Length: 271
Image (tube, rainbow, N blue to C red; front, side, top):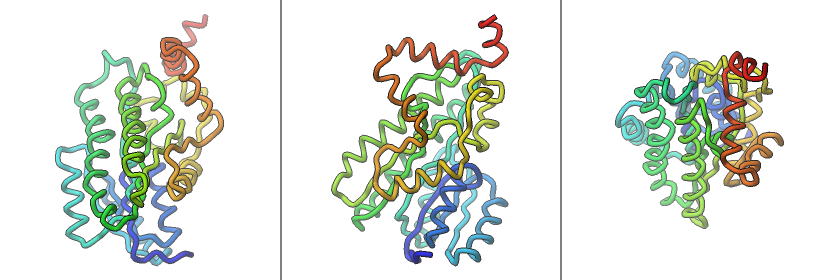
C-alpha cells in the first residue's frame, strides 16, 4: 500500500453508492479521508473500520449539504480541524422522477442547491489552498444525463448539464496550475439514487443494464488521477453521449422521453 499520510481527500455523499466506493479507493491508497453525508452512524462505522484496516485518519462529518450555508459550514469544520484537502470529490446529489408539472418544487430547490450550488461553492472554497500548494485534484460527479435534455427528470438532467459545463470550463481555467478537474459521467448505476429519485417505475430502469458502483468509482478514480477532464465509463454510455451531436435535439428529447416514460405508459403507447 502506498503511503500518502499527509494527503487528505474529502468525499461528499460518502455513505453509499459511488461516493462510498470512491472513498474506498482513496483509503486503499493510504490517503486520509473526510467523509461527508447525512447518515452519521454509517460514517462513524466506516471511520472505525477503515482507520484500522488501512492505517489512515478518517474524519466523519455528518451534515445535510442541501441546507443553506452548508458548504461554508463544512469548509469551516475542515479548516478548524487543521485539514488541508488535496482531493475534493463532489459526489453528493439526487434526482426526482416525474413530469415537471407534477413534481415537488421544494425538492427541486434542494436538488439545485445540492447538485449545483454546493458543488460550486465547495470547489471555490477548497481551490485556494490547492492553488497555493500548486497541486490538487477535483472530481465532480456528473452523469450521461449531462449531454441531453431529460423529460421526466427535467431539473436533474439540467443540473448535471451544469456540472459538466462548469467542470470543463474551470479545467481550462486551471490549466498549468497543478490543479486538475474531472467530470465523471456514469450511466445508470446500482446505488441509492434510483430509490431516492423515485425512478423504480421508469421504463429506462426496467430495461437498462445497471453498472456497479464499484466499477464506476474505480474508473472515475483512475481518470481523476490521470487528470482526464471528462470520464464516461462504458462503451454504450460513451456512444449515447456522442449521439446528441449528430441527431436533431428535438429527436433526442423525444427519444429520452420514450426511454424514461413509466413502463406501464410505454406499453400502452406501443399497443
